[in-house]
Length: 505
Ligand code: HXC
Image 1 (cartoon, rainbow, N blue to C red):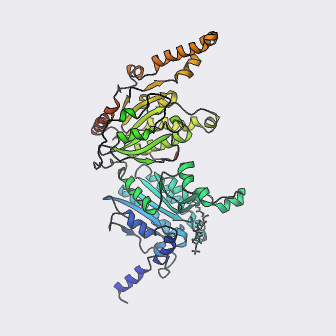
Image 2 (cartoon, rainbow, N blue to C red; image 1 turned 90 degrees about the vertical axis):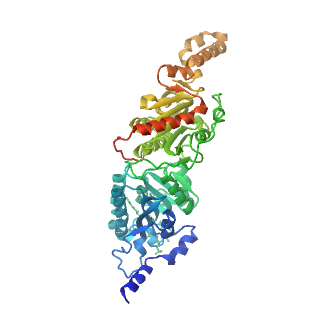
């Protein structure tokens, strides 16, 4: 056999196509297919193609169970690795971990994003500590790259044991319905240790991580949708923390007429704040992060005149838009992600306060709410705040008030910014008068409530005192947003900010 033939023979052994049927039967693509779909056509270059340490070249362990390399996504370079479940359950060996580690280091050196496609039973059990220990290096690299380059993971099969901590250290986790499973201890161990009977999906399926605990950020119905969504997300992000996200003028502004009727003047009426975002962002540019978890706050990327921005908005349609433990953690993480990657923040405020009660207090609303205060105060990117309606108490401060460093704060004419709502306030400050009113109690309460409302519940008190830069017409908001973002970008606001990592919150 000549050398050229020999190469072809060796290459044939690298393809795990014999096992592709097993993947397809589960509704999954193979590792090869996933990478081919993720990258722009014919741009993927593989690293360490023949690596098969400890197995010998004669043993057909195709690509050591992990494929790693780089190529272009939407015309920009990125690294990626894909675990091959058909090779010993995609388990992490001392050998194939080196491929992942090398890709991580190369992505960091190049200053480009890295994407991990997870489909693995965890550490290769037969190898013991030799395999297990590699996770330490993978986690270490995740942290070294944190906030420098975007790190994205897709859970496209099992992601079991401590392996789940590498995704958790990254910026975004995508999760495929039905096939994705992620847990620290599997159902078998759960049964053995605490006697609980639970299925894999109930323990760590997509609903658990998207709805209940907020571990995952984006849901996908299958592999293709997952990879499409990763490609789309990357278009909002820069290659690294020294760059700006690319401008994409494909989408246009929406006609602004009608925006004024989205927010009801009646403060008790709810509405969907995403309708306001629809008006403010370029058409169809909104890309929501964690849409199912803590839906009382909306975190979404979007574009204004093609520029990538991060929207944070209270959602009055869910628990009145109150801030709670989960909303605080979700928002704080998103704010820090935007700040790490130079994405300006636009905050929409309609918040009655922090959600009251023992459940919130006992779960540490003080500790978690503080994360939002920290994240906004720390963020050096342009920060634009718009008060739509209610802005009460500590939650007003937490939603990027001037005190937390907002570059500009606007209010719509319906806005009311105060320590608390009228009825609650009057019952405290006019307690004695109400008590002394005898039969006229209801009358006095109404009088005092009206008086409080007239004096305090409007945007002009805050504007007079300099906490609001301007009270603006809803129809003018988009135009002003464009102006402000253009100005802040031209002036380089935040361009000299110090680096920070993106710790999970
Ligand atoms: C070696 C493994 C493996 C592993 C699966 N396989 N996991 N081989 N090490 N960790 C092999 C199986 O033996 C089988 O080989 C093939 O992969 C497919 O596995 P199946 O069990 O047949 O598939 P399925 O029924 O789909 O179940 C998948 C699974 C299950 C849910 C992932 O295999 C499983 O529970 N594996 C162990 C998960 C786990 O507890 N991992 C934690 C390891 S400790 P054959 O030859 O039959 O095809 C860990 C700690 C890291 O990861 C700590 C970091 C800090």
